[in-house]
Length: 167
Image (tube, rainbow, N blue to C red; front, side, top):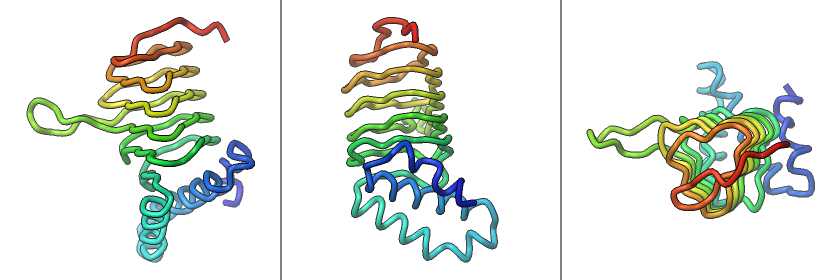
């Protein structure tokens, strides 16, 4: 259990704020896996939400599915929808929004699925039922509304492929 709680610790070394956010997230996420534990942890879940959202400025719902090693740079104004799936070893920077959109029929779309080893620049919007492949780099200020192939570097508004990474 300790390895689960601290799985993002090394990714965020020298960033105490990100370490505390991810430790709090992992504990809250763990509490949702069992109904009895969830009920017992309701005070903690309220504490988590108030502390992380209101005081630290990061909306990272405990229902979000996030792989190991999430790195948060400058965790401020970061918004992630609870339906989002984020792969392993991803990087999120400040002022990033990841979530669903309102469809023409008034319903909400599904949230994005982000692959492994994705680097997301600051002030990026990733919106809608889209998939972002593995090893993708998204430039600062990009608006991503379409699927992105693995090993791509994208940027702009709307985001376009700038080149295929050879890494």
